[in-house]
Image (cartoon, protein in one colour):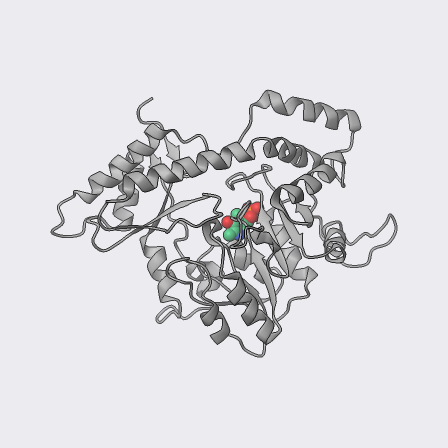
Length: 378
Ligand SMILES: *Cc1c(COP(=O)(O)O)cnc(C)c1O
């Protein structure tokens, strides 16, 4: 079909028949959740795959973020980014914490360590950066700021499955805790799911207790925990996904490479510099002033031809509901984030996005570059 809808992402989903044997095992065991066989297997297999030691699975990434903040007894103000998915900030409000939004770096779109340091007050207890689009934050600089001021450092690593740091180790080993999302739209999914990566066994154990109502054994509750457990169905699916993830990441890299090749010479578009150790989870493009169409003009043109690109992350978190009232929008102290949010569009990228579909998307973007340039059109 010529004009089929192409969405910004499409979930990694192995052939159904491969999943049936897993379901048969669950039915045979009658253990549906509470640290069953697949849950145990996936915690070990994922940690091994990612190159980390202590990983706790969760029902989703948001519960994992909320629990991570609980585990570290974070209070008062937490410095975070306005340029993220809204769950980053929601996790703070659910812990009755005050989000303090500061600006991002214009190249990485991640928290600017200098801006973080400038925003520290006596009430600040933690920093919650996001590895946006799976691009690693400046982990050394952020650690230096956190150490200088005695702050906790909790990474929202929802986008960062499989991402490596400069030394080739997992990006998830940084910070006091790192939190993954395994949601359907992410690079590696368990339908819904999440994980916390801890630095040591004692922290993991505490988090595992928090995840299961605070139970340490059948009759003992040590803390007011939540139900954040991942079910056996999700964990079993994760075990199957692990067999396909390397091929999926390889395909993402190819799609990313194809876009870069085909879009390199389009005037007015800014692509992000490719980072070593990336997972190619998103393909953000900045629509500059010298491209004839506005960002929304390009977005609509794509939409009109069934290409559902997305404006992640627009609007900024600080322009949404509860956060709007907290921030002074007349002179927001995050001009770089605002500019990026006004220019960004994420093009479709996923493992089975065909080369001819990439070509179709690129053709629309190139046509847009040929529009009469007398005046910006939207
Ligand atoms: C997806 C996402 C989350 C939330 O994860 P869920 O698993 O959907 O709850 C949090 N932060 C960021 C940056 C995300 O992209």
